[in-house]
Image 1: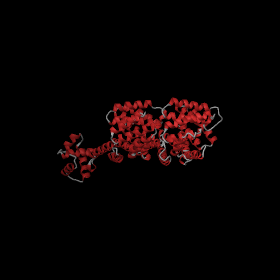
Image 2 (image 1 turned 90 degrees about the vertical axis):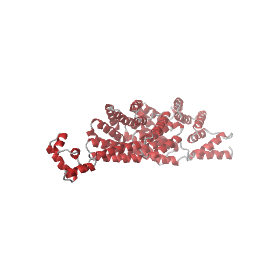
Image 3 (image 1 turned 60 degrees about the vertical axis):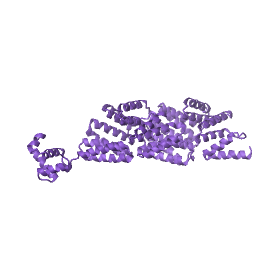
Image 4 (image 1 turned 45 degrees about the horizontal axis):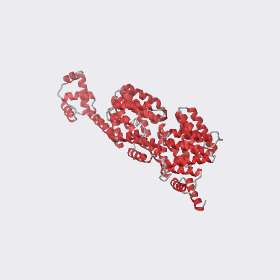
Amino acid sequence: MSAPVIDRAGRARDAVAREAWGEAYALLHARDRHPDEALTPDDLGALSDAAWWSGHLDESVAARLRAHAAHVAAGDHRGAGLAAWWLHYEYAGLGRPAVAAGWLHRARHHLDGLPPCPEQSFLAWADAEEATARGDGPAALAATGRMTRLAERSGSPDLLALSRQAASAALLAQGRRAEGLALLDEAMCAAEAGELSGVFTGWLYCLALTQCMEAADFGRAVEWTRTAMEWCAAFGTGDNPFRGVCRAHRVEVLDLLGEWTAAEEEARRACREVPVDCLEAAAAAYCAAGDVQRRQGRLDEAARSYAHAHELGRLPQPGLALLRLAQGRADAAAAGLRLALACQNARHGPLARARLLAASTEVSLAVGAVRDAADAAAELDALAGDVPLLRALAGTAAGAVALAEDPGAAAPVLRRALDLWLRLRVPYEAAQTRMLLAAADRAAGDEEAARLELAFARDGFEGLGAGPDARRAAALLSAAARRRLPGGLTAREAEVLRLVAGGATNKGVAGDLVISEHTVARHLNNIFAKLGVSTRSAATAYAYAHGLV
C-alpha cells in the first residue's frame, strides 16, 4: 500500500482504539468505498461496530456479514464464531428471532469443539439467558460458571464483569437476592471505574438498571441511573445508543421520587433517543409519562401515552386500569388487571407483579369486591418478603383492605407502610397512604390525627402537581374542619347545647335524647365550664356564634 493508504488505515484503527466511533465510521466507510483499500476481516468488524454506535444498523449488519464471510474464507473459526454471535445479537435486537437463532447456531458450529477461548464466553452467556427464561436455575448457574472460567482464563476485564452480571441475574431469578446483588455490585464497580470498553459498560448499565427495578431495589436503581447518565453524557460525543435506554430507566426512578416534571421531559427525550432495536425502553418511558399525566388529572394525554406504549408491544398496566378507574370505568379497570396478571410471567420480576396486585386491590375495593381485594393483598404480602419497596406496597394494600373489613386494625398496618414510604423518599405513595391512615384514625375516633394526615397528604399532592388527589384531600380536610366542635365539646354535649339553644328545658332535652334529667344537668355543668359561661342564655349565644345551631 502507498503511504497515504497506510496513513488512512492507521488513523482509522487509532480511532477504533480510542472508541471515537463517529470518526472511525467516517474513516472506515471512506476506506471501504476506495478501490485501492480492501478492508481486512478485523477492519470489517470494526466498521460494523462503528456503524452500530453511529446508528446505522443496516450497515452494521451488512459489514458484519462480510466480516463473517472473510473469517470463514481465512479459516478463522474463532473470528467467524464471534462475528456469528454478533449477528445473532443484532438480528435479535431488530426483531428477527428466527434469523438470530440461526446465527447463534452457526456461532456454536464455529466455536464448539475448539480449545477454551474467550469467544466461547458469549455462547455460555446465551446458554445462561436461555436457561433462566425457561426457569432452569441450575443450568443457568452452570452456564455462568463456564462463562466465569473462560473470562478468568482470558484475562479480559470486559468478559469477567459481564460474567458476574450474568451470574447475578441467574441468582436473582432463583430468589437468592443477597448473593445476586453482591455480584452485581462487583460487576458495576468495574464499569463505574472506567475499566471496561464502551459496549460492555453500556451493557452492564442497561442490564443492571433493569435488574434493580425488576428486583425492586430502589436504592441501587437511584444510584446506578445517576451514574449511568453521567457515563452516557461523557462517552460517545452524541453517538451512544445506550443513552436512550438508560434515560428510560431514569424516568422510572424520577417518577417514584416525585420529580414529575423532569420525568416527563426525560420520557420525551428517551423516546427520541432509543434506537430501533430497543423499542421496549421507549414503551416503558411512554408508560411512565402516562402515569405522571394520569395522576395530574391530564387523562386524555395519559390515554395517548398508554396507547403509544401499547403500539410498541407493552401492555400499559397497571396505569391503564387506574386511568379507567379515574374515568369511572371500574369494570374495565378490573378486567384489564385480570388479563395483565394472567399474561405476566416470572421474567417480569417481582416489582411488576407487585404493582399489578396493588392496583388490583385498589380497583377491587372500588367496586366493592372486598374478598378479591383481600386475595390480591395477601398475594402481594407473600411476594414482598423483606424488600422495603415491596413491603411498603403490601402494607398500603393490606391497610386498605383492613379499612373495609376491620377499620380498627388498619391504623398500625398503614403507619408501618407510611414509615417505609417516607424512608424510601417516595412522596406520592406516602401521600396516598396518609389518606388511608386519615380514614383509619377517624374510624378510631382520633379526629385530630386524621386532620393532620389529611393536611400532610394535601400538601404532598399539591407539591407534586397531583391536582385531583389534592382536591380530594382538601375536601376531606374541609369536611373534617366542619365536624370539629368548638370549645372542646363532645358530640353529646353539642347535642344538648343545640336543644337548649332551641329553647328546650332539661326535661325536654332528656326526652329527646332518651337520657335522665340528672344526666342532662351534668352535661350542662360540663358545657358551662368548658365555654366559660354561667347561664343558659350565654351558652345559647355561644352556640349561635359558633354555628352549632
